[in-house]
Image (cartoon, rainbow, N blue to C red):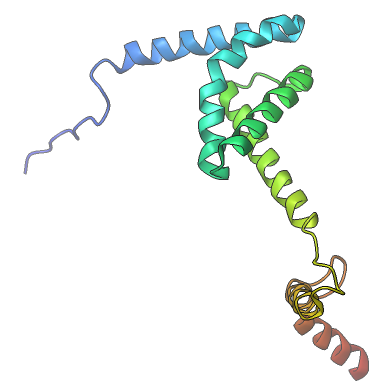
Length: 162
């Protein structure tokens, strides 16, 4: 039986590509450090990453105006917190996309809290139905600091058995 070396799944010029990636990473690090010293250099980072952040936001929120708002918030937060960014060899875009994810989640939570209930006098049945739905969700998920329904029964049995 003849042993054959495994086929390579990497491009033939992988060392050249690794060198290019190292150069790109070094350039990005220099741009970040320059922006940390002087915020006017943040423009270079903005221009380099705008399309990626916007595409990410657009894929998640699906509405153009929301994606624009998210993208704007991401870069505002990034500029405000750039002094906290520490270079660890991870692309700057990963930090921006994490900010975008958090921004999208925060906006969704805020929108869920700001859902307006209809006027109880105009639509009493609808208000009652929405209140019942929320109470059901509350019971299923369990209130913060309050055990879920099944857990409460177990706690009650344990306390009564003692």
